[in-house]
Image 1 (cartoon, rainbow, N blue to C red):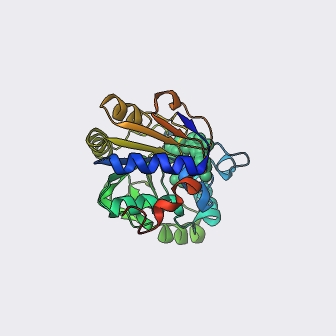
Image 2: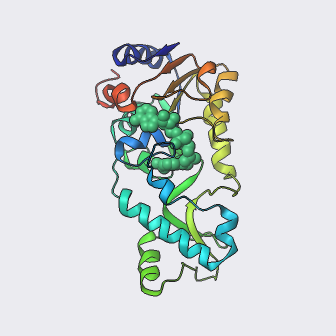
Length: 256
Ligand code: NAD
């Protein structure tokens, strides 16, 4: 069923939320566009001017790493101050009320944790762009320090151990994080309602989770203002803005 009327969508979603025992949230770049971070598919998206660099290219030369850090800092200058919006807050409210067990996200912006979802209930399938790690010893590096050194020397960050330092994101061509994938699988198999929000559902293996939930007997709801690759598999498609339909769920008393 495809619904594009916001009030009708809210009523149907509320019914499913009330009936369910365990909800899993799954988010893509669309949940953060209302915070000012563009998705890949928007026209004139700043990602097109500063595209994330594939992993093999990043590893191939120091020049490539200089370029990758330039793009990263340019994106941070534009979007680094983004704050959670009503969609993030609605999921945080569902988690706080014990209705949602986990938020599985493809996003790298850290906004689910910033909205108050405990870190242990956020599963970042594509890592996190708000800090960096050494590819050899794994130690965490802060972007502020990396940027200071980069601006002073023009050199990309290196770890004390000599390893290459990279944002803690999973770049194209890098293997998926095993622990996050396993946690996402558990959360997917536990839920009886799976909410896929703001994802075009074309990036695999992440887009396999909605189908896994459905095959396991959960109801699947997709919230996206445009058609997605999995609309036909969904029990309910809310073809609306995310903040419009989820806004009321962000109110503290809304789930009483
Ligand atoms: P996508 O760009 O492929 O799709 C986003 C979807 O959200 C689109 O289908 C669009 O119609 C929908 N959408 C956008 N704003 C919306 C709104 N306000 N209301 C309703 N629908 C809205 O995103 P994806 O599926 O996450 O895949 C792209 C990849 O890019 C991911 O792997 C992700 O890691 C990465 N990415 C992350 C960020 C971020 O962290 N914020 C931003 C851009 C890209």
